[in-house]
Image (cartoon, rainbow, N blue to C red; front, side, top):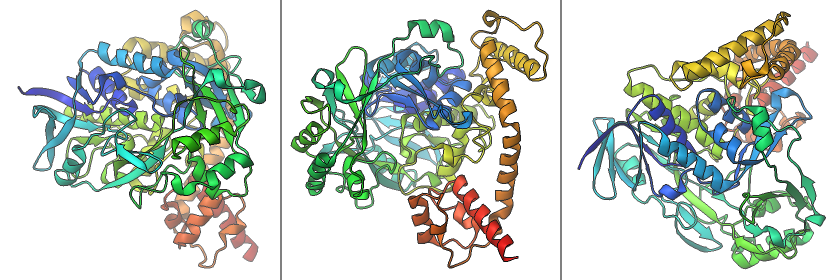
Length: 589
């Protein structure tokens, strides 16, 4: 039996869900294929959405008609604005979620979506002819034709799970890996694959924790939802927030880990396999920072109806008996009972220099890649790419121009620009420091930046867009001082007068700074040919991180332009270097 679809999505994690919903909502007959229907939108790592820069991306997905923000609002059990003591440019929403509820709600969205079908199977190969993809083959031998294919395979491509020195195939614990597709990507598509790895944390029973030895971390008193379409006051009344808690590792913990580093799985597998720098295993922290006597451990609930607790910051690849000793050495966890142990996982990814900014591969037409297959890490980075890959697959088969987001209009644009131009040698994670236009692309104005785009591609309904246009008009009136005859909150809903007034306040507060930011960004572009002395001592730049200095010393760039192309070098780093060189030049004169 042969079947034909406009778009086939391979994988139903956070990237696959956004890709499949986007295509189906664009009116295209879409199929999503997943190894396990019960694992749609699973949260195998921390059941949280948002965070520094990540929260901005979730708001951007929502502004263009994606699903992650709305699902988080109704699966979240604690909401906080991070960096709230600093300026609005770096305010970042974050929510701790009920992991099972999140999966159920997202799965329900897929199942109820018109034009979208779900199939449980494994894709074994791609059908490629004359440099163009025509569909996929699945484990049963069946051929499924498609005008475009989007791969969102997460950690499942030849996934290997490590427990200490023991290892076995798996895309997640108790879930099999995708064993065949990597071969097709290399042989049929000409893609170069590499290996990355990551670690998970143990989960413990909340009833075995002594919270009196920890610091409580409450949610915001006036929590803010992610979605622009969530009616805030109604939502707040129904929301029941749970607390998270903070404790620390200590010298005893570090001795247990340090004495047993050779038993950990973090240094096995492929020689060049890199793990995320920004959420490292506890073994890597202790090796990397021997002078530190403690590290934060956030004790976070995994759901309303479970006693499982996530130990954020205690990622590990140690054997089970040592994980237990390590946990019991921490204040408040002396009698903790482990429900699930942590483990390491290694998987194939495709070098993102092989994809265009539309996320279509350069080697095979109509084949798009999104999420961890592109070497990124994090649910939000995956969902952002899945959304863009799905939209662009839909636009391609409809004969329309691709959606290319600029660095000056979204964090999603920065993410895609970074990975497609610089590539990577370790899993990529988004930060506000990567954004040279962060004063302009804030979480509060994602709708003003991107909702026009969402409507133009058919993912924001006419009814919702009309409401948004009304809000934008009111906002303009307030900004211009025409505050008479303002509408009620009911007329503005799901937006509000409070939201409009806050937006005007932030805009006026930042106007001068944004002008300076834009001048600086333009100056950085002009300064690309500025030479850097061969003997330049980057240690003089105290504002640069140790990682940045290390990379600059390794490469020894001759110009600002060359420095900006180094992997993991951020626009803020280049700005610091440019200012210092300019200062030196003036002093010499």
